[in-house]
Amino acid sequence: MTTSLLQLNCITKSYGNLVANSEISLNIYAGSIHALLGENGAGKSTLVNIIYGLVIPDSGEIWWEGQQVGIHSPVKARELGIGIVFQHFALFSALTILENIALGIDYRGSMGSLEKLVQEIIVGYKLEVVDLHQRVSELSVGEKQRVEIIRCLMQQPKLLILDEPTSVLTPREVAQLFETLEILKNQGCAIIVIGHKLDEIKAVCETATIIRKGKWIAECCLKETNTNELAEMMIGNRIAEIREKKRDGRKNVVLQFNYHGAVDFSKKEKKGLNYSHQLQLKSGMITGLVGIAGNGQDQLMSYLSGEVTGEKESIQYWNGQKKSASSSQAYQGDFIGELGIIERKKQGIVFVPTERLGRSAVMQMNLMENAFFGVSDAKKYCHYGLMDEQKISELSENIVEQYNVHPSNKEGSISHLSGGNLQKYIVGRAMLQDPKVLLISNPTWGVDISSATFIRNRLIQLRDSGAAILIASEDLDEIFAVCDEMVVIKKNQLSDVQPIENVSIKQIAMMMVS
Image (cartoon, rainbow, N blue to C red):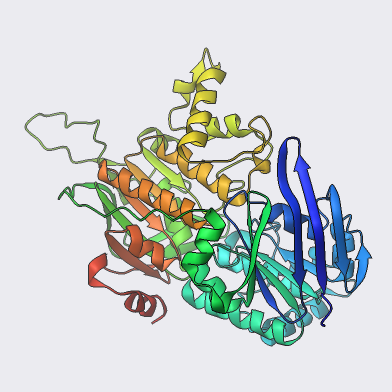
């Protein structure tokens, strides 16, 4: 009988009254790809943190290559040959790709020789990477993930753990990642994949362990188990359906991007991005913005939201609360290209970026403080210039209840939330502001199937109330599930807007790469 590379026996971990892992056992073999599945808050992150030495279990045994071991720190895990790519990347934005790789490994040679080694990894594992001397702050989420994978592979791991590796990747990037994983598998590396996209899990993994509410539920062969069976084991019941998209004919333009020239998004770097075509967001419509990572969608969302400002007439906004000075004249809208994100938020333009930490939430703050951090009208939640804790607490509790967030400690920092619960909290906070325009990137990144369906239905509900919504997503299934129309962005150029029923996934994929 083949000996396990990694064996967990009856692992248990509690936080106060919350049992995150209850007597979970797991076997991982060299040269295999194993999925770890469960809904948000099921205990997946706690379990892999135990494997990587970030969390010490209360009880249970860990065996590595036939020997019982204690993994009391990430240093010990790396010594054993365990590498991990977290859902939230540990990269320094101000440093280059190469500098980040150097900081993450024990390497004492020159930067020139390190660059040669990195290039060998890139070629050997078929990883597509931009200039190694480019700053991490300029990278897309997908590109940052590849940097983390390279950094792990530099340590020649025997076990590689990937947390939600395909959440923000395009189909092409997913295929490239799977090719890399297949190379690693054939070299004898064991791989654990945490994910919620079950079709992709079945395509790349051989076996899966399902945990629910901290308990082991089943281990199954993925060739013999369909996605519905997997989903029901993860959730414990049947998944709700996406609501039917109903249209009532409202197509008033709410936000219009007028720019046809170069947009300077980085004054320090003096880099301009050239956009063409006019983009209109309409009330009661969901528009999908799709493109391969790094083609300008992140910068465009920042520009529309006011994170980055530009020429006044580049963005036109029809605020429903305003009227023309002359009753005989139709309201022509306001030019708001010079307004920052705070002023735009006050006028009802709400933005949810892909990056949860840093841009959407502050790790050191608790749930209530993070709720206040994202409100559109801060004065509404203040009393004599100070935070009104009762009102903010009520807002936070509404988010938790209405968006099915499961915090381990409502008074603790938001860092205690799992990735999926954090995403639901951030999306819920934005939607409860009753936005006139919602700009949202990858709304269901890292959430389970049930939660993804819930969020998508809430987006449709918000659309039906008259909001204009722009979704930037690499998940084409998501675009087709909720959007009324779509536009492709490639090399900072916007295509013509197409009704979603007039295009296929294959056509969009071709537009993204052709």
